[in-house]
Image 1 (cartoon, rainbow, N blue to C red):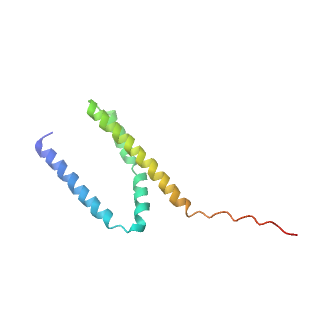
Image 2: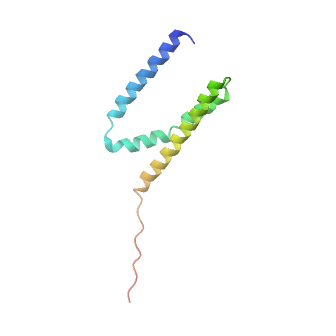
Length: 103
């Protein structure tokens, strides 16, 4: 990796961090939890990327980084699924309480 490519990649990382912060800070508070749980659930793309990285890993650092990415992305997907499921459960109708017939 050359110095120029490292600087370019760091520049893209910093710009992406600033852009992500600006986009998320403009989201209303009421929409933040649904948006983030959906984003976490879609994080499955990172799992696929981590599997691809692990498949082509040659050195120990790449294997450790790929495994860490796989574990963290899986935790993010599972957490997003539970939060989304819990939010959708809030909108389900509750069964009507049974009324006893009086004769």
